[in-house]
Length: 89
Image 1 (spheres, rainbow, N blue to C red):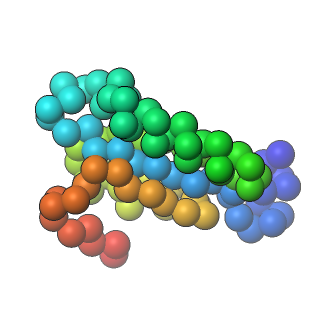
Image 2 (cartoon, rainbow, N blue to C red):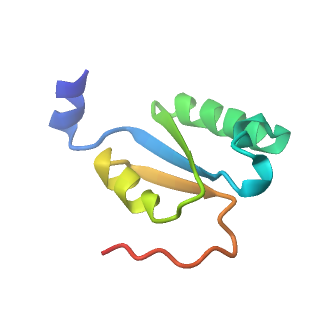
Image 3 (cartoon, one colour):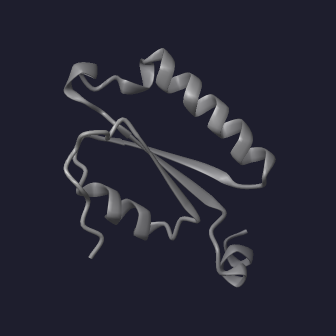
């Protein structure tokens, strides 16, 4: 499978980064809204032949590293409204 993905020059991976805000105390994936959203995303992504990769973090600086490490075809950020702007250098 990895060889096929490399030959196509795309990963078929859609990344989702969820803000693990301190109010969640490390359990953001237990939140009903977050899980419902991820469930709906997972269904749609799978229907289109893509894979969903989820990462939780409260450190916005981890996002560019995460996205580039996996050569993702798309990236969705959840819960980062009002957080300082990312630098994609």
